[in-house]
Image 1 (cartoon, one colour):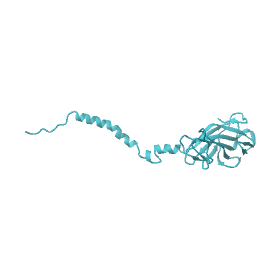
Image 2 (tube, rainbow, N blue to C red; image 1 turned 45 degrees about the horizontal axis):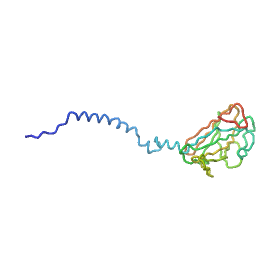
Image 3 (cartoon, one colour; image 1 turned 60 degrees about the horizontal axis):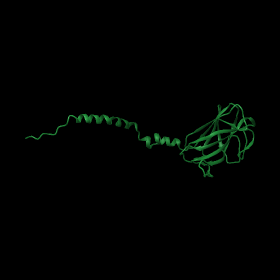
Image 4 (cartoon, helix red, strand yellow; image 1 turned 180 degrees about the horizontal axis):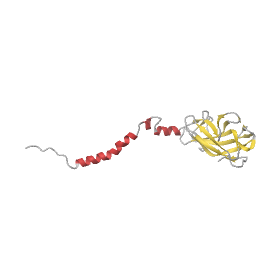
Length: 205
């Protein structure tokens, strides 16, 4: 008597077809997941890390002072032009974005962009700032009971207050932009809008 070969159930092809259909979207998705996205500098994940690394932000509202020679936070400040009806100096506070590494402020670029020109600013450690110079005037830590390090590396939770002597004075109604450029990070722009009236202490919102 001939032994019967096991046959394929009529239900099996249907099940196999359903399984294949379910797997198609998964296989189609693989080409779009480029391995470089996770391992190379051009990839999405690495790129997002690089862009957030060494990035800063300005905290609070920048404060402007009239363009007359004066002492600000213990620093002798000299304006580009003596004019009490224009903004000659700006004080603002910078801090790293959450989770960022230490930012070397010695290698950080800073520029003033106006409607007509771009001015590169220079950092100084002197007790005097002249036109086109900026200096760190105060350091503190956002965490209770902690203080900022003595070095000029801007680290997590630290805030540096900086004084800028503008290379040109800004008149009422004029606008400018301070552009911070960490060496390996993203640029950060802070707009300076001078109100119609210059006060001894003017908020530049």
